Structures are given as structure tokens and as C-alpha cells.
Length: 246
Ligand SMILES: [Zn+2]
Image (cartoon, rainbow, N blue to C red; front, top):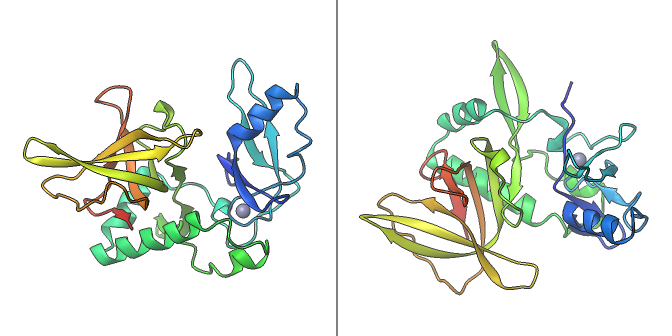
């Protein structure tokens, strides 16, 4: 039984674009609970098939989007499977060489960044026969499928996600920061007012990335959040090269 999944964003059939959970909560607040603008038109951001419903924020719980129980994802949608644990992801990555990790990140990025392009809700997910977010793991000798959770870098990187492994992704600007004899890659994301704000950084060891600070990059990082340096988290990669930008 797959645990109930929550969605940070969704495919809106009215305009064929990906929208975020925040937008629904804002409309909910502004229109005193009336979200008829979105209601019934929110679909899974990946397969664009499963219908999603919104549960508003209360004093105890934050708002969330979840799949309507009567509705299903397409076969190849990664939301069909339970999320992989940190241990399962690390074991999986251990079996891959550098080129395979880079390929995996490249395919994941293609899928996550291009979600809006196809307006045909059925064909879109059929072409991803080999879904890059689905991994094989073993459970007492049996092969099982698990999904690598995703996290958009435009969203708030909350303490509750600490130590869980995600594919962090998004459109970013980058900058190299020297740190003693090492380097860190600083990551900036676009705010609502279109300006770029500092989001997080990744430790790069002795490797100095060659970055054009004016360029917008697509980035994918397989890693986890580390809050040991204060309120703004750093991302630790699961392997040195489990990071790709282009
Ligand atoms: Zn789906």
C-alpha cells in the first residue's frame, strides 16, 4: 500500500502550466475559501492524469494537495510508488559509475523541467517508459520499485526535510565561493518579484566550478539538507558528482 503522497505543485488543465500549492492557498485566503478557479482542474504534475484535491491550512497542519481516492496515476508515473529511503538511494547510487549518475540526473532534469511542454495529457507520460525517478531496490531478495522524492529549489527548504534524500532541481543562477582551500557553489533562485535571491549552497571540495554568473542554469542535485550551519541549509551531495548543471 503506497503511503498517501503530497504534491508541491500541480498541472492546471486550464492553462497547461505547472502551478504551486502556494497559489491555491493564497486564493483560498483571498476568496474566503472559494477555490473554484482551481477546483476540479488540478492534475498530477507528472502524468497529468490523476486528479488532485486541496486541503487548506489549519492551526495545526499546513495546507496540502493529495490525489483524489477515486482517481489514478498513469502506469509509468513515479507517484505510484513509495518514496525510497536515504539508505535505499545511497545503495542504488553505489552501484552506478560517474557517467551513469550524470545520465540519471540529466534524464530527471529533462523530465522535471519540461513538464509543461506537452499539452497532451496522455502521451506525455507514455514516452517516459524508463522513468528516471523510479529506482529498483531490494527487499529481502525481491526487487521492488521506489521513487526518488523531488524538491523544487524555488520552494522553501524546510527543516522538516532535513536528512532526507531528494533530487533538488530548478532554474538557478550560480556563483563560486572560495572557502579556505575549498569551494562552495552558491545557488540563487528567482523570487516572485523576479529578482534573484540566495537559496542554498553545495560544498564542492577542491573542485572549482567554471560558472558564468549571469547565466541561468538548470540544475539537479541528488542530496540532502544539512542545517548544521544555521537556519539556511546547505545541500550535501550523496556522491561528489551527484550534481549536474547545464
Ligand atoms: Zn501521476
